[in-house]
Image 1 (tube, rainbow, N blue to C red):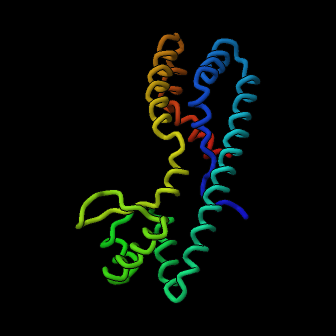
Image 2 (tube, rainbow, N blue to C red):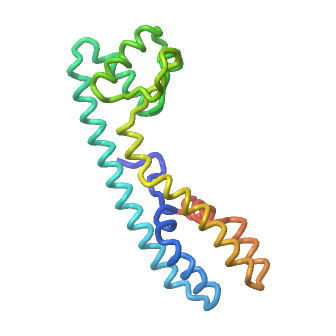
Image 3 (cartoon, helix red, strand yellow):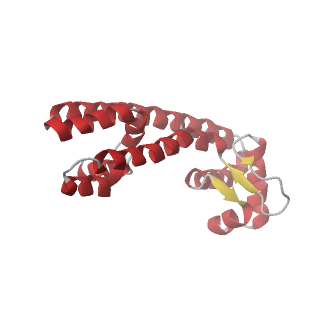
Length: 193
């Protein structure tokens, strides 16, 4: 089955291997050695694809596990499945917006969200009585993998990248590389696949 959305996160690999990334970019710049860059980038694609497959398998297993729990609800399974499909697209919810989006009553949404909390599918993320917020935490934890670390690396990496290329004399190349930035190069690549 074909994927309808991008599933590779190549920039994660580049962030984890940022020193090698910078070294290889410097090698291209200094010696026009593109072959080593292409090999490195192909490895990034391979590793990213393997990570994407692993993430998809985890999300599929979680989906199947939770669908089987919901199917045990008997007559209530249909509405519970409607809610479950909604939380897979909106993993952080509140009762009012969920009820409005699904076109069901507030009390019905509250009841079914309560059932999903009892089953461990949803958790309440705030400690209030009104405007309670719930999250599909198992789903989010799979998608959050190393997110904080990625943000830290991106900020460090972007600063170093600009510093590295601003030191060189070829100003037109500097502007091109800096304007694309660290993730811009990846975005450009993703659109040309």
